[in-house]
Image 1: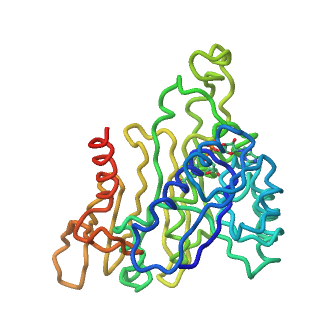
Image 2: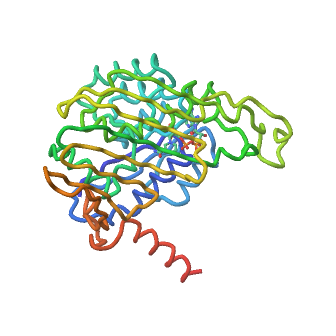
Length: 343
Ligand SMILES: NC(=O)c1ccc[n+]([C@@H]2O[C@H](COP(=O)([O-])OP(=O)(O)OC[C@H]3O[C@@H](n4cnc5c(N)ncnc54)[C@H](O)[C@@H]3O)[C@@H](O)[C@H]2O)c1
């Protein structure tokens, strides 16, 4: 079993998710490699302690990321820090000779993103990739496969997006993701845009132009959580809340419009990722609102135009110990049940 030794920089929400996934990696079958977290870095000691208490493989915990980059027991770095730090940290990770799994959006603005891109180009032997997990739902993988196989015929239109809703609450305190200084002026587009673009880009559907409709809906928020001194003061929330982008794509499948929407305020949508591809020979759609179902409409001249809904008992990209006739999410339900019995 080959170990891929990871260092984590940024021990917040996503750092913990990554750690939890590595802790149950044996859930996947037939692999000859395994990630192992050997080092963590955060400016917040308490955030690092969570990892040290749970992961015996963590041998180093440092507050200066440059020390983690010097470690000989780190092959690859998972970096999950605020966007204003992406440029410096991602370039330093790459220049230190480490492989990088970086969180989106790879820089706070276009200039930062270009500098990261230049560092990647200078080090072609290192593996650098950007995180985006929703396309690993089995139905999304099916749509991706159909795209690679050219099954859609001439593409008529594509729509893809990620919608959230917790920002509908005007009392939700400000955080770094709602400030231009730390998130980037592009707001929801930087924060959510890569998820919307992941499958289109993988299928070679690059926007060649864009028209944008952008909204700022809640323009100030409490400066701190209830009970903290900041809670009484309203502070600017200056990033874009919602964006609808209308793009044109020129690809092997023809020229077609692509609508991308990233919304922090889509009432009722906790974290809805969706993609819809409309084509002359096949149309297909999937939304995490309905995670078991893929909807599709195959078409040949003279056929009835009828949408089919299939329970997506398809194997995921990496087979696991969960048989493929059970749904994605079954093992999360098992985890909850085990907790309940143990409790
Ligand atoms: N893939 C996804 O679905 C998803 C979801 C949420 C966030 N993200 C992305 O993940 C990244 C982090 O977001 P998060 O929600 O985990 O944020 P978070 O605020 O929960 O965690 C960020 C961590 O970085 C630490 N940090 C700040 N400055 C640091 C420094 N100089 N050195 C080391 N650590 C430092 C903070 O103390 C904090 O613990 C962002 O790029 C965000 O866009 C991705």
